[in-house]
Length: 398
Image 1 (cartoon, one colour):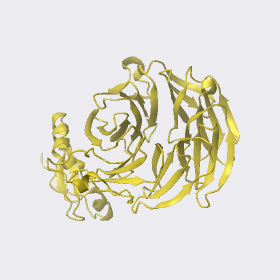
Image 2 (image 1 turned 180 degrees about the vertical axis):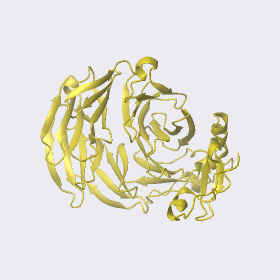
Image 3 (image 1 turned 45 degrees about the vertical axis):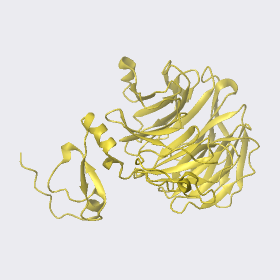
Image 4 (image 1 turned 30 degrees about the horizontal axis):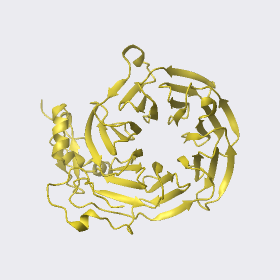
């Protein structure tokens, strides 16, 4: 496939013929002139349906309609393992059970599989009714949630054995598109083509929250902040919404809406570990980065040749990964994105202009908000944590 689209924020210079056609034999591809470095992983033969960072961002897990799951080394781009032969239909999602060193996959062949990540063998297979649209593993590694288009159902199973623990038919009135555990392993959020959002409680075995007409079209994806307070939903109505599910403030004022970010249906969303960033993917072939506090878009990443199906962001917030119907996975290096003029202008327009400094310890660039502009901060947070302080610096003069 010939790549003719340019990546975002490229300089206005003429691209020669060698740059137009990437080396298809290479797993990684650095696009010339891009201010956001991007690396492309090729290995799947059909649409890539999900992508996740794992093992402290050193590994990447992807699934595809080609019925395979690939386990990648992030630094080298090497395929460490290809899981194949376990499904007869497209794999819709995959997720890691890190405590068990295993991978869970859901498929349109109506089965859930658990794979041993060391041997590549299947640990167990369970057949569930209907096409399985998604799967999620609880933070404690005990449970697997999955959604089926038959009876619009939600399943909760044992991650170790696959035994069905709970079956909730009619959980929604239309196809359940996605499900996600919170980090505390207390609730399973589910979103549906019926435009509703539901939270199912693991302890009480009941639906504890239901938001009807949360969007004006199909809700395709959802994700929690690490503390479980906020739930984000992405929809085919081209919008993203944030819901405070702990305080329930949305009941009086609705969800916080993030719009004007995509020109097409939003397919996926993911919070950074500290919930300062949100990343989203869309059928308009772009990936967007959002400032959560300000509720505005800071960056758009372009380069995929087809729908973006899933996104994730590394724990250190240096990398964004996206999967696409174009059969590729892209790794975007956003470590220094705040230095890009368009990003700084966007932050300034919203009153969040960062102060850019160079760390005297490691030499890397780091940013401070206008509230943190103090003279004694000359090192990034990582270097400051490495250096023990015998006394605290004096406060800045008023």
